[in-house]
Amino acid sequence: MTKISNLGVVDTLEGLNKKEFSSVEVIKEYLNLIENDSKLNAYIHFNAEKSLSSAKLSDERRSKNEALPLDGLPIAVKDIFCVNGEKTSACSKILENFIPNYESTVTSKLWKAGGIYIGKTSMDEFAMGSSNETSYFGSVVNPWSKEGDKLVPGGSSGGSASAVAAKLAPVALGTDTGGSIRQPASFCGTVGIKPTYGRCSRWGIIAFASSLDQAGPLTRSVRDSALVLENMAGFDNLDSTSVNIKVPKFTDACSKSIKGMKIGIPKEYKISGLSSEVENIWNDGIKWMEDAGAEIVEVTLPHTKYALPTYYIVAPAEASANLARYDGVKYGFRKENIQDLEDMYSSTRAEGFGEEVKRRILIGTYVLSAGYYDAYYLRAQKVRTKIVEDFNLAFNNCDAILTPTAPTGAFKIGEKNMDPITMYMNDIFTVPASLAGLPAMSIPSGLNSNGCPLGLQLIGKGFDEETLFSIGAAVENAANFQSI
Amino acid sequence: MSLDKTTLERVAYLARIKIDASEINKMTSELNNIMKWIEELNEVDIKNVKPMTGVSNEYLREREDEVNDGGYSDKIVSNAPEKIDNSFTVPKVIE
Image (cartoon, rainbow over all chains, first blue to last red; front, top):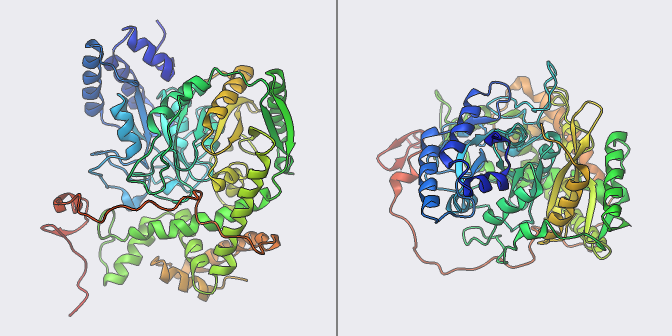
């Protein structure tokens, strides 16, 4: 019999429906793997009792022929989603012991669809990072690492990507602000989709940059992502930017032909720092699309090079406001032996936040402060408009855009964490779609000479995830990427 | 525009983050490098361009201002580092 943990989302559900195994058996197998993993550090918490009791209820529903769409499916959750009764810290010391007594909308929808909480995955602190090295709970290891040469899983959803790639979960939830689902998906050889801004509710997700944050799944196949996203998306009154629009059946889109579709190739993404291996995979992708009957068109996104600096004003500005709430009063860490209230705030925040988080709060505070607001923040908001206009024009001539997900494959732990700007460059291809709120997906497409995965990114029109799933499935078919 | 030590100290005060005297030089130079890189944006012609605050063009939804929730202050203070009954406590601010 196939090992249960080798199965993805669709196959696990099929096995459950055919009574080849029970949900309790599925959960026991994953809990055993998670508990015994000493290499990856992908998970930071799990709750065996909670998972097993949910699995029992799921098996009872199935025995009465009342199975729900995801009934019995284990789902790993990035530590940024509030899960009722489970420690939720965004991998920060400042929230180390925070236990929410409410549930995020996205996780609540998944539990209502029969999904089972299997554990919390590590991430960069407050989702600020591209290597998972800023997590308060330590670095996470990419399962593609070779002996003695530990590689980062990417970030910020590094624990989720590592867990899915290593088959410690069939699916894990991530969030993406500037590439935090897509870049780790690329580094770990998994599929990851950031849906259109407004598609998934942000309620109950610890906020980083509210105009950019979106939730999405990481899985080992395009169809698996489609099925999970179908069950987590949808309008929510509790999120003021949630969009009231019907959620299509994304799984149907996975088997749609891409014949005649127009796929745009933006020339500005051929940057000087692009490794030849990444460029080769990109060229392979272009050929696969032509073979599948799509038409390749060159498009131009002239403001691409300004996307990263724009992001590093907009995101820290929003973060500095969102993170003002961590003051040691209402929840989380409070510094002891303080002199007065003022000292309590500033000492708590100095010790509770890590270096990168502090850096971004300071940048955000600076660009919003009197005398600098117009020169930085207002200017960045205007450049953001230009970036959106670029995409609008490009989409007059194509149905989706194909690019690499990241300029390189996974790098070594410790290799890039000395210089912030070097680290920020990881997100050069993912940030533009984030600023424009567009859906974008990373699909594993090949390996570099170090034997590490490289992903291709598809960017779609707003609320047209279906086209991404159709093209993504075609990329997946042609790439024939093999999981570990 | 360069960010000097005095500006950094002012920003750190605004953000209520205590910075150790030993860290100030390093932090000033790090933030300066980032701000210099960001100045690339000065090349973009933004005349008559509208600033973008969010992705959605729609207006934020409105709702009736009515009580539809509440009565669980114990839950709200359950994560407080220090509390007395159902109240948060902080160091004394008046004599």
